[in-house]
Picture (cartoon, rainbow over the protein chains, first blue to last red):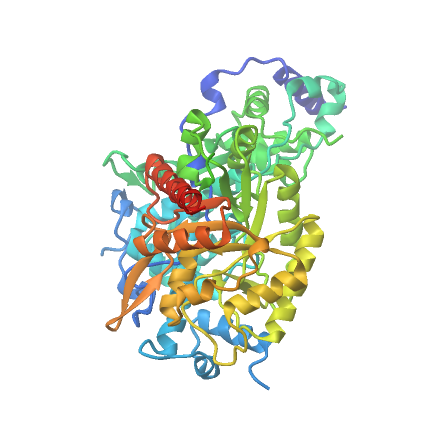
Length: 81
Length: 256
Length: 279
């Protein structure tokens, strides 16, 4: 066994008995909760573009501009709108 | 011979994806509501409901770009990539790559990585719970054998690495988030996404931890992975990092 | 008389139902939402001791000419085995063609050819589950010129040839009858009464199609008056069955859904009192 390997072995073994601070285990925020369950349904859509409308279901991506929380994300090569 | 069912269903499928199929319109009874209008109810529903399913799976992307742009983006994806099975929670595997290549989304270079984070959270949430590797299980292994051991991440545990601060972008996109700006050139993020008992969550990893996990995930043993961690960050503390990962319960217990 | 009306269990209500355990005849879930191992499945399993369940599939695509998706069928069978629900059902429709899933209950031409396909698929499903399933009449927005059977004739033949049950969705009868210019009461006459296992109720929307109203089955409001009236006729004609109130769009607070279920129970009790009085 090389020296590095011995050092690695003992560091790994030490990890097994090391107490871990609670904050190191991660946040307690609900990132993706149970309310997200359930995407399959058996109803029919009735949005303004649904039904028999001749208008397509959604507008073309090219004529729609991102408009949301992205306004808070700045810097980099972000092109001016 | 009237319209045989396999042909009718193939023509209907093409109609749903946006094609005009005259033979299908001819097979439908029209009156004061014409056949074509009746058929559109189904096309609109398919495209709208699949876009809604993507919105539920990629809520952070939707919050960033807003409903109109998201629907346009989702619809472009839907008509190219329809689901290949009925469970909608498993639909959207290719969405992040699609976002990365989608010209209208180019102004938001971080968007594809945010989509990867949303997909990882969705995948983790829907992973079946399985026993995690505990320090006690490893304590049964002789110390000198530990370095050659390989460890597998549990199903649903995913490392999402980005050159953008996607954890802070994620936080800024949550309902009720502060108006504080996030500078996309303020450093990348390595996030470990995992299933918890009642939800899915992510934790940021330090550079050394991330390289260590990525190496283990690629199938390398602990020794090589420890060295990968040190290469990425000379101050990587193997004991602390490994203890933290074990405490997070991200490694799969050996199968019986 | 005890409750006959149950409600659709939707994720926004999962925590509340788990905590408060409101009284209802049964809870219905969509199979496809519980095939992955999310915490929602465990939450449902914790409710099993207190509630009867209905597993309502929306994606088996029983009308697909290309046959059933074996992998999906196996997952549904595993869920049914795990939850041991009181009822299992899916629709008289198709959703898959060329291996692509369209997330809609698409209409079938009512022909002998389509009947053979649906019978074969329903028999395969029942064999895989080892139990009877019930098939629901869909909401239709169109009819095919080459259909040779009416929808009730098709369902009757399906019941006789496959041994399946019949799930009568009263809202879908109203929607289809309006959109395809049929008489809902004529639609109802002559169904195989013994095969009827369950009723569904839901709200629908009235959309405008260039000046013509078209009814859309959006499950997004209270049950409409016309549906309540027809439901009363259905109960009078075919008797009491477990009855589900569905609500999937703009899902209301749980008490509103429970109110709708209570109204369904009142309709059933009213029909029962009338019958006693007439005797």
